[in-house]
Length: 245
Image (cartoon, rainbow, N blue to C red; front, top):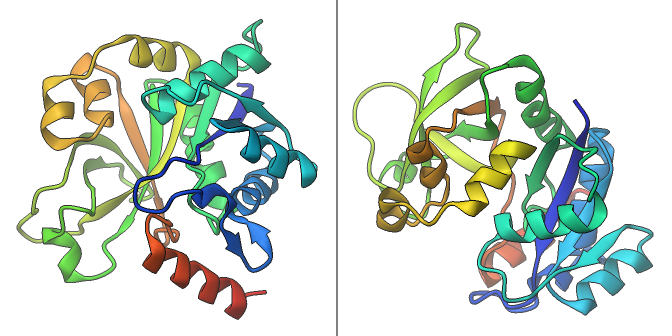
């Protein structure tokens, strides 16, 4: 297995414009994500940038970035475009899609995602979950939940479904963390397919993969990392950086 980590990022975020360059403790957010990805030691790290400003910020920090079409419809399309640019010969058979808005994601979480693909021969796409942070998560449509058939060790499970809906009954509710590890062939199949009915209904692109018959597995993380989607999240991230220099 020869993984590469690709981090999609673009400036035109609706709820927090220019967020890849948002200053968090003296570093642009995208640079913080880059550093965490490098610590994981999984493979080379490249930012798939939708804008020249992001490329410049990454390169100024000593990282590698490739400029992609800003009008690409999704992060998955962006990483596929970047992959074609940086690895046209297909040397990397596994692609880790790490979101550019998780500045404090643990390196071990990234490594666990890649490890699932190494361990589970039938896994097409690996991802990550964490236990609910509070009972309110169960009914919050902004919290995406993963329904898993857990492995015996409780450290991972095969994903049966992802949903924004309320989950009832006893047992843990797993919050989905937006990290994906694709086998390269699965990524190519996924991006070539049109949005599926369940994907359009729930507005969750991973449901396209499930409807296509791809096998998803999820590793269990200790906690969901801070995800910066709006000004309140950015304030939380800055406070975390100040408390954890």
